[in-house]
Length: 371
Image (cartoon, rainbow, N blue to C red; front, side, top):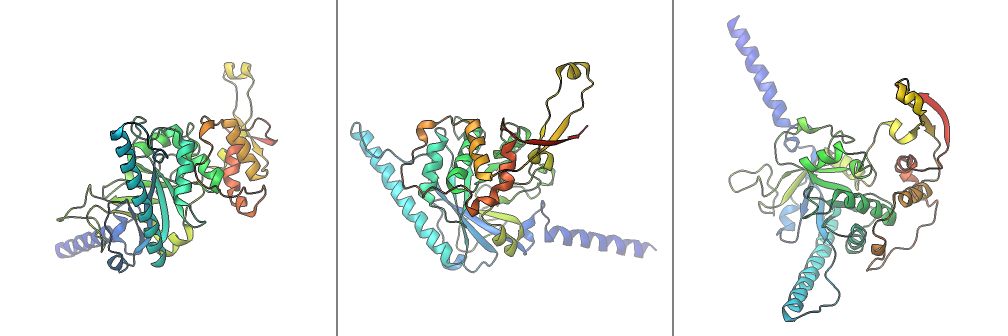
């Protein structure tokens, strides 16, 4: 009997170990060889593309595009200021050339392509225009906004990131992915009433721990879209969660909670994530003050009829207000205006329904009581 018990215990341990080795959505998913991987890089990451092509798990590549706003077009001031301005333009030009080269290499290897903008303090409309003009995203190119921390003195504020995402939608018709860390993602999720768009952007989650099961769900986020699990912070010559051929320890590696085929099908993640139906398809019915004071009020919601999505979104953004009107002019070429009712905008219907709750002239049909 003792032998049987010991054998069963050993078998249980082996099964548990096998399960851990395979990985799950929140515990070392990169150990599951069916999970797709995505690299992201900035201008100082050296890459041997021939070696990189040998790793069949790498499905996508996201490259740093813009950083804040571009240097001033005209270098003025004393000699030191002009030299600094000239150096900034030289770095900017080299980074731009590298960005275009990497896009060509990624496309030639059949990798999904994406670009991210590093958000800085300042006008988010000007930064969104700069990002779009710099990256020139195609219909299948992923876009992302990088908010390193919730510190508006060093990085773009969350309120400005909300406006950045809205303006990207205005120009491109798709939303960007949000890259941020655990504490900032939690703050956004806890304050999702203040950030109705930011809290619904697909989440690119940066956390260098083997297990994040205790961190989801976060508000509207039931899971991550991408999880940046390996970087210079936890990868060195002795130990690294995942080593990518042709790269050094400082390359960022991300895992998706899906297979390669599923990732290619979902790319570029341009829509907002799902939320409960009552948040996007109904509006609260006003309460009589005397009932509210008496504590006898029952909160009710009314269904909302869907309208033409582009018109609804445009009005909602206008109602929300543009706090940076001077930044609406792009410094580069802009795409031609898209007419109302254009077929591509029909995919934004769910996003338009969210905006309807902010409209004063919404059309309410029938009311349903909700305790």
